[in-house]
Image 1: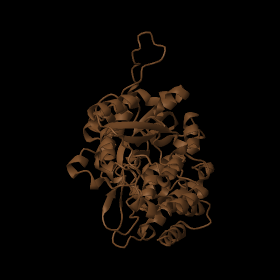
Image 2 (image 1 turned 120 degrees about the horizontal axis):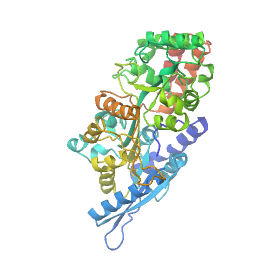
Image 3 (image 1 turned 45 degrees about the vertical axis):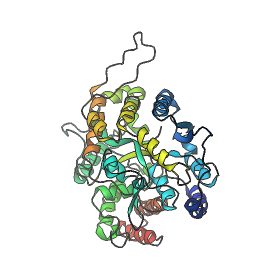
Image 4 (image 1 turned 60 degrees about the vertical axis):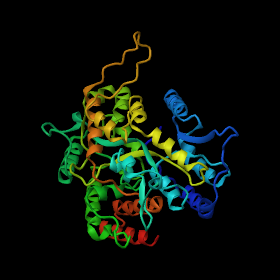
Length: 446
């Protein structure tokens, strides 16, 4: 199981684009030979990503489906997360393509742009889609120039919250900052205490600054022309805030080259004040850094009242080369329905994309796996902070009105954004010049 969106290096992206260049004529006119036996049994091949830890859950769910659909057999193949994208590309070119594939939205968007995936809106009604939390569908949608297409169904979700170490905050502060001016003041105070840093943002990694701009309400793309316009609407000013913090030394310089894991390590060592991460991170802190866990608290995403909610999800897609797209869509809908996603949330610290289940998660205690070695196998009581984090995460997703859109050629855009943000942080370009050049470079891709 994985929830972080994947961003590959230049070689991987170049290889991907070279391969998908061949896919347009293939995906449009060739389908997989029907895997249908003489007795009328249809076999659907279902690829999941790193779900072997949930083998009992997966096999029981598949058995339930096969019992309810005697003419369907599901061939389940679990793929290591590190191999998922490469195997998906290979399958699109092979004679034998899977019918339902578990991928992340960014990579799926690349496939959808090349016409390799079905549009679920061609198979499901608005009433059927209304069971899902709207922003989870938005995250698996894109505008193709004529209409909005839905290239995947959301399976499971994580929504980031603010996790902070109260012991590192100055006395009387009363919690993490809620807006940018408070962030600047508190970052300076924590650093002056000599205990570490308030935060370690990865601004030049994986297109993270797109999310910063979106949360700040900066328009990214002109809806009429499709051109990037963020530099014309305050992106330089938004970047200038972070450049000033970086220049003052209240953000570790390592944040330019180190990723999220480095921030996680600093937090667990007690030298970082806050993290924007999933609620499941608390279990890691509880196990690896008990002393830090004792002073860990949670709060809504920063900044409070931002335009959208930062979340990650994994989705199910159906390749156009599936010989049985109608049956594949029905199975994908079954996997992502209320009952099955409810069961998954009881086994893992994830959120359901189903409205009804998510409403339950917003007010119920999260489940805790049985403790190994316990005499009576009774679950250990959950600490209040973990309960609060789980419920807060669910409430945020329920209240979300928008999510950052998946943009065409997202990975290439991320690379350009990362480069120019880094140039500004290193003071090789002014923030305004960096954003103007980034905008021009992105419009040059169109």
